[in-house]
Length: 402
Image (cartoon, rainbow, N blue to C red):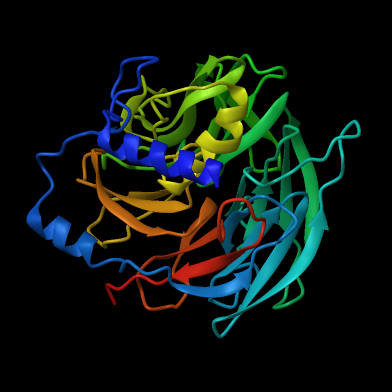
C-alpha cells in the first residue's frame, strides 16, 4: 500500500513537474529534426499507412527469452513472405502458409567459453549472398560471431541451410543490414560490433568477394556505447547507400545507468564509400527528475518510468517505403514496447508520424515485408505483453494503403 501510494504521488509530481529537462545534464530529452519540405500529400499517404491498433497475433513469442529478433525471408521461394525469429540462443523458421505461420525450431547457437550466444537484441537479416536465387540469412549475437546460413534448396516447411562462421569480434554484433554498397552486383552487408570490455563500437562494411569471403572496411566508431541496430538504403535519394543506426545514450550515476535515451542517427554516404559525421534524427526517452538511491531506483523508479512509457532505450529499427512515395521511411521499437513511425521527406530528413501502437514491453523484434501480397509493405513486431513478464506475441501489422 505504501509503495503504491509513493508511485501514485511520484507519478503525479512527474506529470506536473518540469520533466522535459533532466537535471543531471540539463539537456532536452526528447527532440526531432524539423522538416520544411514534407508535403501535405506525403503526410496524407503516411497517415493512411497504419491504423492505431496492434494488428493481429500470428504467433506466440518464445516465453524463455526477454525479447526476440525478427527477419523477413522467402526461404522456400514460393512467393510469400516467411520470417525468422531469434529468441535467446534459438533460431526459429516460421513458414507462411496462406497467412498461417508455422513456427519450428531450426538451429541452436552454441555456447562460447561457457557463455550463451544470444539473439534477444541481436541481429538477423536475410539476403541472397551468393547470387543463386535463394534467400540466405546472416546472424549476429552477444558473443560477437557473424554466421552466414546458405540456403541449400529449402522447400516449404523443410528449411535447409549450411552454416558458415565468417567473423568473430569482442562482443555485441547487434546491428546487421544488407545492400550492394559498391554496386558490383553482389550483396554486401554492414555490421556493428563492440570491443570486450566495452570501449567502443564500430560499424563495418563487409564487401562480398563472390566466394563467401569478404573484405572488411570500418566506417564509423562510437565510444562507450553499443550500436543497437542498423539499417541501410539510399535514404537521401542521391544514388548511393547510406546507413541508419541507433544506440542508447546514458550517464553513470551511483554505479547505475541514468537518463537512458534512445538516439537515432544517419550516416550519409559521400559517394566514394566513405561516410560523413552522424546526423541525429531524433532522441526518445527520459528519466524521472529525482533520485533516492539504488534500491528506490531499481524497484520503484524504473516501474514508474515504464508505466509512463518513458523507457525508450535499446532502440531497434526496420525500414521500407511504407507510404509508396519513393523514399525510405523507418520504424523504431524499444524497451517501452512502443513502435514509432518516421517519415522521410525524400532528402534524408525525417519527422515522426507518431506512435503506431504501444504493445506492452520490449518491442525489440521488428521486420518489414509484404506479408499479405497486396503490394504495400507491412511489418511484424515481437513484444512482451507487459512489464515484468517474458510472455509475448508476434503481431502482423498490415499496411492500409492497398
